[in-house]
Image 1 (cartoon, rainbow, N blue to C red):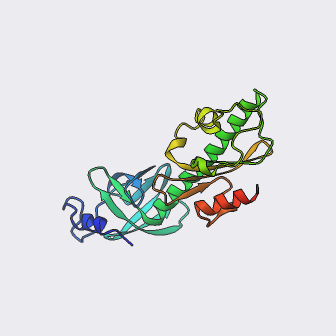
Image 2 (cartoon, rainbow, N blue to C red):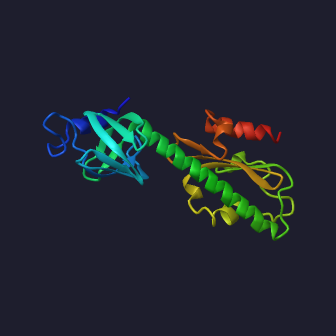
Image 3 (cartoon, helix red, strand yellow):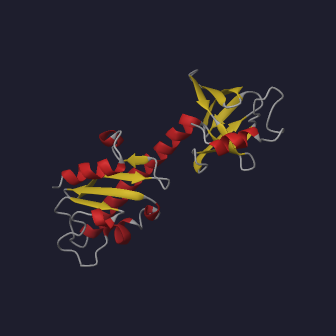
Length: 223
C-alpha cells in the first residue's frame, strides 16, 4: 500500500513533471530508492525516444499511467511496475518490486562480504595459533553470542571489532549473525538499517525466515 505522504507528493508534483495527459515525464537520470526514500546504489535513465538504461542494461519503456511503468528488456521480456516519484529535485524514484529486489540483492551481497571478512579474520587469528575448535554464533547483539572467544585467545578478544571490521568497516551499521563451524564461517545473516530486509549467505538455506528464526536455527545447531 502506498504511503499517504508519497501519494500527496505525487499529487503535488509540478507541471514540469506531468505531461498534458497526466502521465509523469520521466526523461532524465534517476536514482532508485526503497519505499522509505533511502537511496540504492542503482541508476536508471529514461530518454525521450522511449529507451531506458538501467545501470548497463538497455531496453524500452512506456509510462502506462501516473503510477505504472512498463519495461521491455533487450530480450523482449515485458515487466510492469508500480512507481512513485519520491523526490523530484533529487531525482529519486521508487519502482515497487523492482526496487525491492535490488535492495534484497544488495543486502545478500553484504552478507557474502561479511562471510568473506569473517573467514579472512579467521585466517589472520590462525597465524597466532588461535582457532575456533567449537561451533560459534557471533552477533551484533553480544548477549546472544555463543562461544565467541576461542579457548586459547586473550580475555579481551573481540572477533568482530578487532579482526572482522578491518575487512568490512561498515559492520556496525547492520545487525548481523556469524556462524562458525570447523574453524570456517559457514553462514552469515545481515539486516538492513531499516530492519525490514534480511540478507544471507546461501540465501536459499533461510528463505522466508525472520532474523530471529535464523538465529534460533543456528543456535540449535550448537545446543
